[in-house]
Image 1 (cartoon, helix red, strand yellow):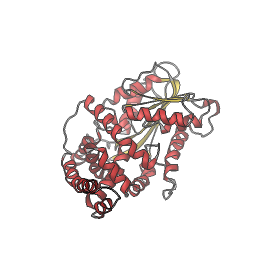
Image 2 (cartoon, one colour; image 1 turned 90 degrees about the vertical axis):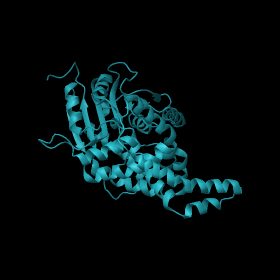
Image 3 (cartoon, one colour; image 1 turned 60 degrees about the vertical axis):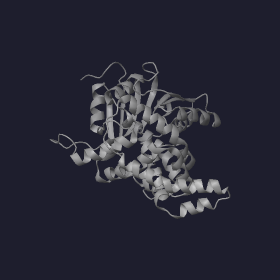
Image 4 (cartoon, one colour; image 1 turned 60 degrees about the horizontal axis):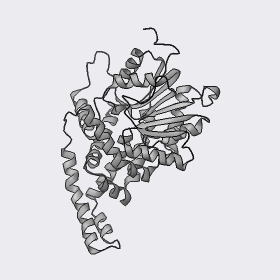
Length: 358
């Protein structure tokens, strides 16, 4: 998830700022007034108590759908600039084949291309290439701009809950000469401001996990897809349940509940759950795949990039909710390593006419 990656960066920054005794000294030696120096040193030492409060706040408190949406918007408004400063315009994981690759920014771009190739079955689509694209949960629009560059003549519209992200996405589109082909706005993915059957490609990369109403989310993806259009959903899920298994273990549920509190997430679902929802909506040609192992090396790269003063200062400026999420990243890693959290790919097609036969 985009938020997951951002908080992984912040987790590393949090550790540095809380534990490294050299940071206050290096800041206090900067050419500035003694008053400012004392304030900087005090801020760095003071963040330790804030981090402890963040850790202790990870309790399972129920949030309404409106609270979740407000929290997501607030978090991204405050934190997206930090991610862009360190990693650029793509707020998602990278594609690590081979797993020891070190060109991490290119790995992020390759993830988009490889997901498209996996879904369509080819890199050379010719007349099958999408002409109209919606990016659901667009971040600052990196995927949208890459897709319209990849497919000449195509246009993309992105939606996000964050005003900052929408504005920044439009700024970057203008800078890259794409204002007439890629645009971004604040909108709710559960109530998209688009007519039925509007898009050849409905793209959602690492945002589905934020949706509080999964059936409504899938309904909206299908609604705005054109007949014969393709839906590509890449999202974090919990593992599929085994046959005869009624639910996740209590330990697994506790991990997910704490992650939810920090990341403004609703109840998790599995890839199998998404597949069933798509079937109910009449989707055809449904395929799924687990790419958890393909994206895993990116996390180490994000941690490494965070071990610098710039990231620490960014953390300090991002606010308490971000610091709390940084601590919760340890839980995310634990869940991933335990196999309860999966990076799932799902693709399907909307039938040419009406719903598919049951």
